[in-house]
Length: 367
Image (tube, rainbow, N blue to C red; front, side, top):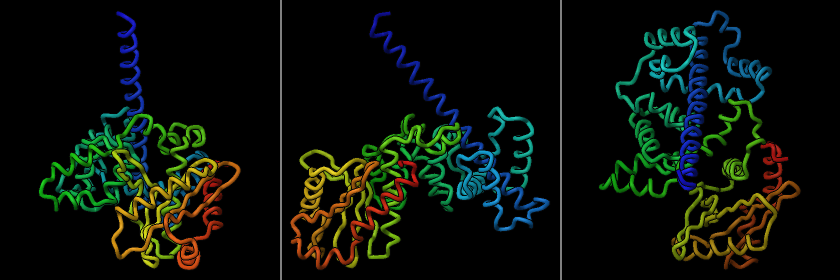
């Protein structure tokens, strides 16, 4: 063995065993959540004192569990577990493959096989599903009622090794429907996978569900990119709920300029202003180059992305660190007086956005 071979041997051992360990943690988490769903449905149907709790069952259960296990176990999470069980009852058939006490899997298997109706259409084999997709992937699929559509995303997420963000993106962009309408379906899928963000062991280990399951505090491994993504998630909802004409159009919008890729965090269309609103979020103090970058995006958008009937786009740059938050509007080539008199009336104020960012940072544990 030479030194190069030594490095290769260490890397091979690390990569394989790291992947095995993460897969084992993820599968245990997924099975636990499925079992929660099973127990909840069983109690709702046959619990001796179920009438006592009624519609407050999940909230009461959440409160009790969180008093003992403070991480996770929100009523929303329990509702997702319940839906997971209802969407994938066939998981009961593979419980014997896992190291579980006989008292758990035997009773679950007997009940599930006897009383739950499986869909006539079979998706991905559940053993493959559990080993290849994280629970957070599965969360994106459990509310889909069409088993064929759900199976499509199962298959493509596994084949393409999609990250959770990529799976969300393809569901939101109606890949299933677009594939059905496409003449060359294989070419569309190949093009999608070439541009896809892959799932990585590091990404799975940063999953909030995983680190809650193994007993870590979110702040211990809440990377800057995770905080940024959480803020973008909430910002998207915040703007849509303002009711001021915002219509969601794209997330991580990719621009190809002179052979290089640039990404805009959020793109909205404002139906009252008849213009696009580009939003860029930075987890740091504001730099003057941020406004220049946004104006660069705006000028590109104006000449390449919008139709003649639309007004010029505007941009919002949001920067935040532990001490302060800064919001800057960028107007590209738009006259500043026109922006103040016509645009700013319909857009949230800088103070509103700064307050939103501060509150969200506090809620997410960013101090």
